[in-house]
Length: 66
Image (cartoon, rainbow, N blue to C red; front, side, top):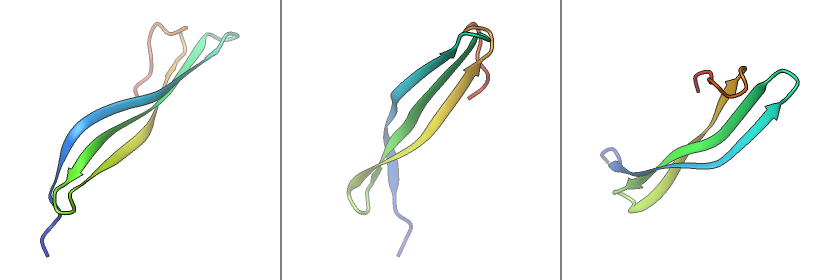
């Protein structure tokens, strides 16, 4: 049996959350990011996702890398 064939059908960003820490000007952003892939062999779509996070220590003027 050969490898399953798949292709990406869309990218998603969902459920963003923002939190702030006013005492030291920190801001935190967390969200789910993913993509839907279509599995041709089984003819189904699957969501592949990660939880992503960024932090700002200057009141949101700049953010660390994801």
